[in-house]
Length: 328
Image (cartoon, rainbow, N blue to C red; front, top):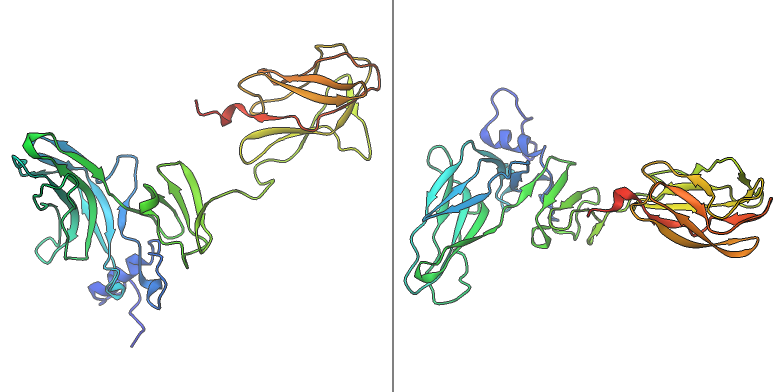
């Protein structure tokens, strides 16, 4: 019958135990009747670079990790949770005098005790300058890396092929485009974090796109208030500032002088984090036509020309990247 025993009850078999564990892991993103049973195989991500390969002389070391491995073709058998609890050093065959090869380092479910092994699968020697990695017939494995061993004793190099997984509903780290889950028919609730571009992306059901929070979800408009200035009044917007989702500070509103203000006078001083890293110069509309308006690194909005009492000044169009937006 299609009903399976509940997880973690007395007397369940290994299949039920693995299925129950898999319920806590993000989906594999396929679209058929058994898709709800499939989980995404991969390593559990952490700051200590789990499963990373370190090349040495005729050897490779695999750093500790925990991972989930499932046969996508047989999801009803459940997913395996595996652990490498210490660095493991694996021998590499010395290079051939005239032929190249690409070895594969894998984490694999096996029938012998303890049921899990991390090993090197040696590639075929060839004169090809870009040899392909060897095929693995056992579907219950994870690729940790490819090692290119050039001919003539030249030092080998490796390509990171680790795939990561995440808890159900978590944000999935992916190394790049080749590591993206299928988007067609994918979960529209799934988020990924691109390790190559540092972008947060969401699945639309047909593609992975950069996530943009709803407008206004980061900040609201804050009223501007300073001695010597007042809002012009209805029907114009009051003076205010905000920061947008992409880290830009924006000003709005129509204000007036009370009393006259000299050139160089500070209209407002914006608080952190609304200050810029560099001083910006703008052209603003006023009762006297276009005038200069600066925003300096202290957050001061500085008048570039004198205004008489009750003259108006528009803050519309004043926008600049906030200090925190800069990465260098």
